[in-house]
Length: 284
Ligand SMILES: Nc1ncnc2c1ncn2[C@@H]1O[C@H](COP(=O)(O)OP(=O)(O)OP(=O)(O)O)[C@@H](O)[C@H]1O
Image 1 (spheres, rainbow, N blue to C red):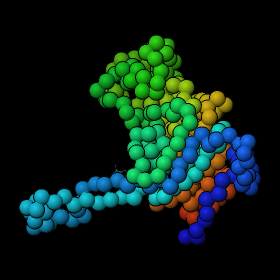
Image 2 (image 1 turned 180 degrees about the vertical axis):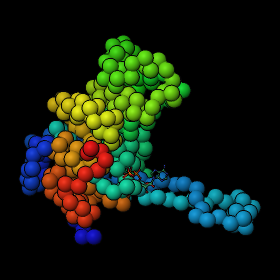
Image 3 (image 1 turned 45 degrees about the horizontal axis):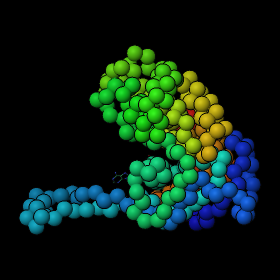
Image 4 (image 1 turned 90 degrees about the horizontal axis):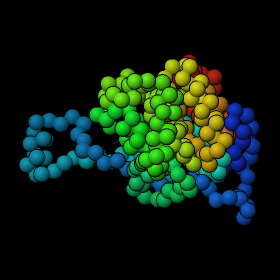
């Protein structure tokens, strides 16, 4: 694989094919809305590839547990300017969701620093944080409170959240009774109705059918007008191209490129050896 250095161009208009060169930061440029500096994130899991009866007995006898460390993010640094809508692309296991969890503050970095200026939407990986034994309404309340809204504000928004998610009477049913589409639609609806300054959306556009996807895209465009930044993780390069004005391409925990959607998608698809217009299921 050719090695590409991370650059930091100014954001272009979403959907435009701008390939603008990097703009140097000036003294008057506003501080980054998100700053990730030398961040590494490791997962430690107990693991043994093919344990035998003997190795298990020996390990238990010694009171040992075999630990495998996964370096999910490795020494990653980037700054995001206000008004940027950032697409995060990369192959399975690249570290996209891990990075999102770290920016949301639910997964502390093993090393390095993440600075976020503004209220970040807490429900990012659609439905993380939902308790399946609680009703949709109860989960919406918890999500809203966690996002820093008052009880009155949450109550005010609950009807709007339910309407947008199109789940009707299921709002008062435990979420374990939901179809996966209903679950995802409610999660998406909660995150976009909590007025975040920074919106993190993980594969949101796979939430629901084609009609819901159009509605979700419109809502995200609307939010971008007011939000300070948006991060979208998606395998759908079409959605990334449509909604984002900057792209981070990560691979095996490393930032390979930060650039315009056009440049980053071209480099990524060349790397994958598929055409830029290749469709994924999320595009359909
Ligand atoms: N809880 C965990 N414990 C151990 N390893 C994990 C855990 N979560 C993720 N990993 C590992 O960390 C790496 C990055 O995973 P992550 O889910 O962030 O990738 P991703 O880019 O979001 O992948 P995908 O596109 O498949 O969703 C992978 O090697 C994955 O196996």
